[in-house]
Image (cartoon, rainbow, N blue to C red):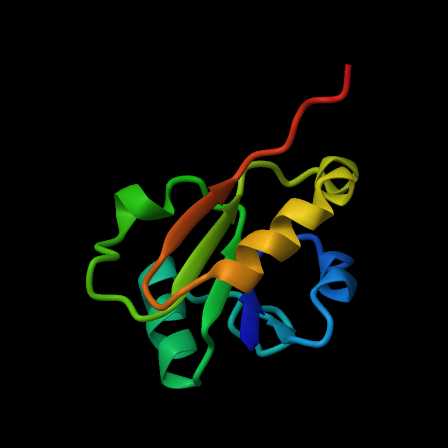
Length: 109
């Protein structure tokens, strides 16, 4: 699967998603793209999943016509994501065209 990480998505997560091909918006020079531009470009370039930490994306964009699956991490904290990385792997593996999924991570107590 071809996966794109948006700004704010912790890059170390990439290792857990092997053997999928993972690129970041920064690596591609797409850091300045607004969400609509990023989604459009990602779809044109054949990305199947966008992993983002932008919890407002679904309110800012009309996602009903999008082919790309969107996985929203409900935190930017790498320690919290790392502790729940199995859930991210599960959601990415189950993602389907046009799906929107939020992945929450328990707070450490």
